[in-house]
Length: 224
Image (cartoon, rainbow, N blue to C red; front, side):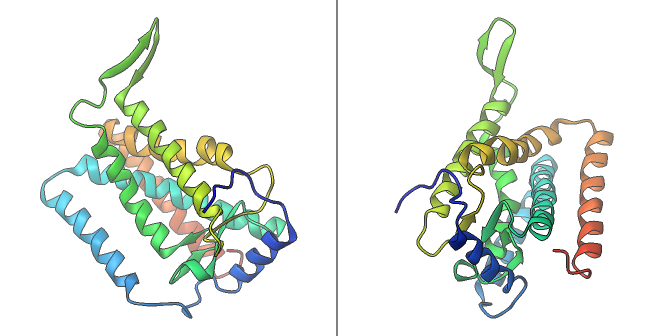
């Protein structure tokens, strides 16, 4: 077991990507865990809806919507350059949705926003650090902390022997993932529920609509 902090930019990594591309939306590894993960996600969301924790549901979908925009972009980068920023291996999953996201990973991201939102506690805007005009609230600290945790987990996955997660480019690794990917993910989950109703709806429905439109166009064209 070891952590990888940047992509190797090697022929082996590109060969792993080429192998993974052959298995995008291939059902060769499909098994019943697909249904189990889906059932868990349904249970969590319907429990939150039943308890009228609507902001928690918004947090989950806010992160998930941003996640899908990133995954679509990553797949487009793969088509344009021959290699994505990140890639999942067919040996590590039952089903690859796009080159950089497996079914299990996608279901996890459906829950990640809810987890982060709940971790803020009852007073998310409480200031936990202040120096002059510089303030850090629990809302911000939780987003940054979760982003760091997820970046480190991804670093571990990139170092697994079966290539669960593959980074290709030598300039892509823990720090870029932390700053450009996971920080926006968790800022979305922690701050979108705080928005007033109209901006909240605009954010969610426009992003969901954009993702659906891109998938509906790019998948049939064979781009992603």
